[in-house]
Amino acid sequence: MNAKILLPIALLTLSGTAFADDATTTLHWKGIVPTVVPGAGVIITGPSGRVPYIDTAGLDVKDTTGVFTSDQISLELHYRLCTDGSAPAEGACASGFVQGEVAEAVGDIIPDASWTMSSLETVIGTLDTTGVGTVVKMEGAPMEKSKPIVATTGTVTFTTENTESVETAMGTELKPGQNIEVHTVINSAKAI
Image 1 (cartoon, rainbow, N blue to C red):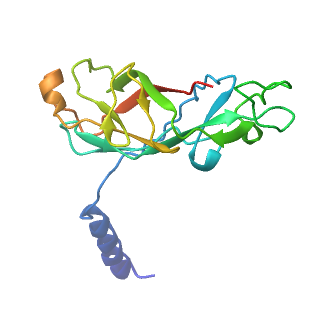
Image 2: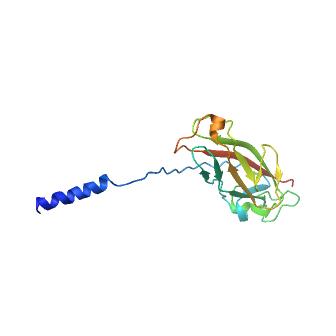
Image 3: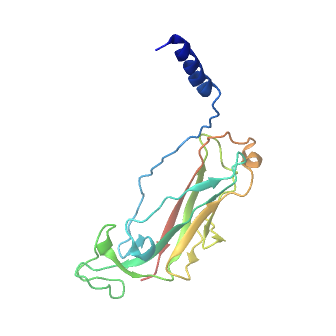
């Protein structure tokens, strides 16, 4: 091929990439080993008794102020079935309860279970987040540590949010790309 033709083609190709407009993003995948402390006569599930249930949801971080809202996580508390397939009588099973976090253990839903938040932690890298005003809500109502809330329906929905700039609490704004995580421990119980 003629060198006079190749040179303009090569220059056009290089100039196209040299002046290209581009954008960059960072993708994040995160997994947490579930922490489940099973009850002898009750089991926490997802909606409709689903086991395993979804215990992780996304955070929508507004900007470098650290203000965020979250997707919801829905849970239910069910009685465990007896190993002979029967329902427990007055909270007891002569044959014993089905053990493990398996679908075969899921019995009737407990519509008026108590739900309690025992811990709440906001993690932003290695920063001290003590003053960050993260709130966990159940059915839209803020939860307080160690104060049970009795459900009015069998399926309850949890969300988390921070509506104040972290600059107020931490003295600095966040940098683009910083990761925010919220961890909470939720307990559910019902007198059997």
